[in-house]
Image 1: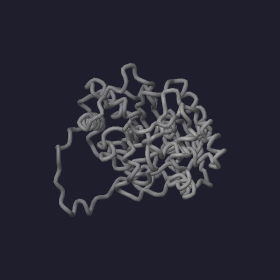
Image 2 (image 1 turned 135 degrees about the vertical axis):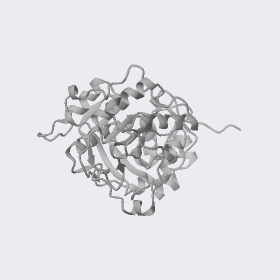
Image 3 (image 1 turned 30 degrees about the vertical axis):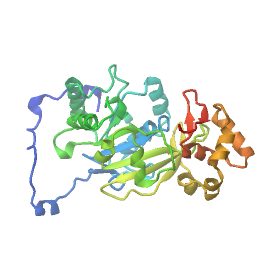
Image 4 (image 1 turned 60 degrees about the horizontal axis):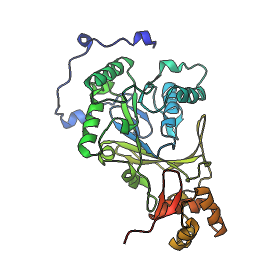
Length: 349
């Protein structure tokens, strides 16, 4: 599909809107035959008309997961992050973070089959001048018209904090309503909606499974509204560690499946086969028992230090790097300043 074919929809050509609500008999539900392209990926992980949230800390690789997903959708086969792809679909990405240079680097390194023209299957916005202004009727109408003509199977909005301006329940609900307003009214034409979102700064013991929904930044509304939710986490706080862990924290219409570990590279993600999930989620029993507050206070010293220096000090105490990084996340007294220095902060009396 060329850009010249993507003409703006004329209202007279659109079908009449459906009724605001319908009432079905049990026999209608029992006899319902879902379209072949209803489920895009996994066990109802990505489904047309349903909302999915992909959460993670800044810089962990959430946005980098999308171009490989678009390629998988364009081929209609294979896997994405370990989940089977069931049909071909187009992907439309409305994003406000990554400029042309970043997108050139990512898209140039994609593993695209030689017989596939990705221009037919993927559209990505450069960051709009005024951001993702879904509060504007004009902005919504423009996106709605493009969705109508390009007919994506997947619409990605990246990031959520560029859409919602206030951190309260009503603002989240209003923003979700505006997002859904750009989707076609007809159920069979509605794409899956994937929202890229940030996590809170983690403190306390690591979360696992459904507990990870609590880590989504801001109102709980975003997690409650999603039918499925993925959380992408760095394996450690070490910037040289390229491993990440993907967990489906919610899947209302299917099995979430196990967490998976990946190496994040310039050309996408590759499986990490020898990952220690027990240590990642819980920390080894030895580490949790031995790294006490006194050990942390002694290693961090009086002033802020770099994480690398902290790990070196902990090594002298007899602790491995992964356990040391885990302790930084586990103790609430550990603070990090704007310069990336970590220090021990005693609670106020």
